[in-house]
Length: 309
Image (cartoon, rainbow, N blue to C red; front, side, top):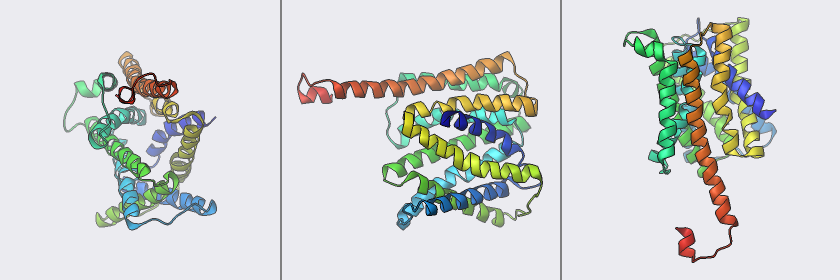
């Protein structure tokens, strides 16, 4: 149940974002979304009486994570969806797994092997097939190309945010409170930028805008995250991560119905390669976990130095 909810919610948020675009500036819409999400999540922390006292250095770490995960990246995603279909934006976001591997190696010194390179290559080829029409007619002034670049930039910022989150968790910061404060700081950053750049803080009272705002704040930013945490607790982080492989396909299906996205043989092949490449990355982690478990269960028959090597 948690798995299905995570996929459906994350897959549908890309379409919900399109209802936020129009009369309200994207930067202001991001401010509204994470302000609401932060208030609700902080209230939930208060009701649950979770520890909320942190040092100023810990608040700085949470704020930095918030800037990358709940502010700048979403602003760029909103801008990107002014130029490309929401389903395609979701497919590009699936490459965050590849970016996480690369950034993990650079910033966290995580090892990289040939299977990681192969998985990344499959994902990049898949993206090329999905965006074949845009790539073959690429022009720097083209709207589709602009959306493509914005989406990749947003995905990379999200990947940096993931690395910061991993570092914060390693430092002992609790996930729920960190995300609550991160959303708050992210909303404040976007509020400040909106004011500095002279953005209008008008609010649209239409059903589409208010409904999508509540859906994105409550379900996209809180419920889906809660479901994903429950998945991690029940089946482990590696298996739970499979949800990120499925929701771009769900988003493309929704985009087909609502936005008239037209599938081609190249698009089908591209999505298949993206999923295959990401599965290859996940299988690498699963095999490593199994190998480590096997070593722990095997009685020592050689010297400690040999086992350590």
